[in-house]
Image (cartoon, rainbow, N blue to C red; front, side):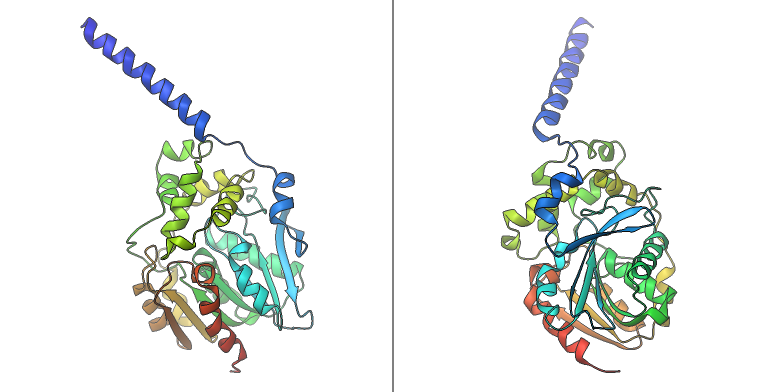
Length: 317
């Protein structure tokens, strides 16, 4: 009996020491907006108040473009994921992108509600604040799900729709970023609020790329730093608590706007089979598949993925 007690004491001490070590080596404090702005808010950046949230966005290009292109990033990302697209598109068009609430420099929703209706409501208010009545809407992953839901809710505001590895249909993921898994796991998701190793972020980014050699230190630093923005880690966990709208995708067939579907053939998170679901249900669509891209083709292979976008924007319907 004494031996068992000694072993239990040893294990308890070992566990405490291990936890302390993990916190010391991998624990990170939140970073304030003031700390992050110098690095991630460029001269093109602006902040605008939308329902009490200071939204980080960039409004670039031709101010006379009456139908601007709105770019919406996915889970865990930021407006920077569209840097190369924006650099090229702004030469002829007005291009607007924002950090969604919960990500980037924008910060959390005050009420902690990260449902799709909350995001589409936010998008409507954001566009209204900028006095935008018509636009081309493009979104990746979560951003794509927001885009097609918004198109259904506000069809008069959307002239064209671009979906990039968009979420919304039931999916059988072949691989999921470890950060997503931890955010869904009780107890571990609490630890994620304080213990966020850089290698965890790197692994999660590599998971959504096909060619992981393109995941540079600067890309990992950006994802890591913006994850630490005050409020973002809790928001990341809170979003995975939201129940999915299981039948919402049944309405996709009601979208009549010209639609461009872009997909990475090597997407392990939302596999290619989901691209064909969009193609089947959207009555006025074009599907382009990138053989050497994963879940974020606009970031992994920006030049290749931009070509069909430019052609699509030129088309009149």
